[in-house]
Image (cartoon, rainbow, N blue to C red; front, side, top):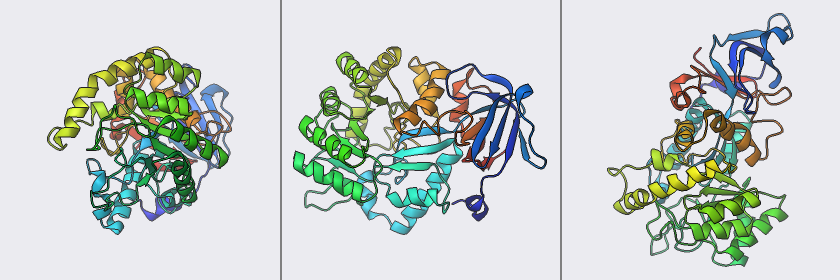
Length: 415
């Protein structure tokens, strides 16, 4: 867990000089840039010759030619789970140790450059409150709390005798009316968004990714109920094509994974301005025959090529792609390797950075204050070694993330 001093630090004035600025808007980098921060807000980010003078005594950081970027987002994590731990055993874990381990994963994720994260199942809202109140350090959080699934679906991890091993991760609904009640329950428990299973999945033993999950009318009921409660967004676990189409027709905000995103589904997602969160880490770093049950491994191998083909086409067609990793399936604290996987399928390094910053902020509805380094926005930024526009893989190595600033507070500094 974080040291007491790092938890109680407050935002103060800060000047960063000698930086290569990549501001998250997609515009060309600024060499020899200066950034001025005051009270947690970015006051200036641009060329050094035009930078205003700082008052006497302002703390300074010398980036020494390193690259400064916006704080990154991971829009699909499971911080309540250790990497490789079976979700179905969560209920057997010591809750005290689980809390401490989760706090450590939050810190690890922040220090990897993720200043904002969206947890899509298994993280109680109390962690969001604890981070916001400064009681622990981690990315600012949006959490779905639990996952809405049908009986026998992707998030149903009950034993045949009815014993629920999810530790409260799952919310079961088998009709449109039950789906509405499920939404009300997760929102009552503090959810910032609603997550549904529109398909089966890789890790679930009872179904296949191409199986349909909640049906179109049930998803539509979820979306309508979320609308009635402040317009909460709806994320759909959607892997196979039929379920992807159900989710799109039901009106979801984002497609998670989207492995089976064929041409028709891609066109429909564009027409409806739906975000795609490909979680390529589950393909590139989430396949390990030695640690996975055989059914899980076989499904992953079978879908790997399909995923790469479909997501590469989505990138080529300019789909609205946000960054997500499904961390827990892959390792925590290496979230920004996802940028390399996007680049491997055809996305330029600059576009990958925009996906992980500005576009992700748009998905979470916080682009008015996060996602780009522009005056007036929150001072969330990272300083990394090297030039990620020449080698995007730099960002995926945590030791290359030399400094992390969140709301004007230095959370990590190895400069």
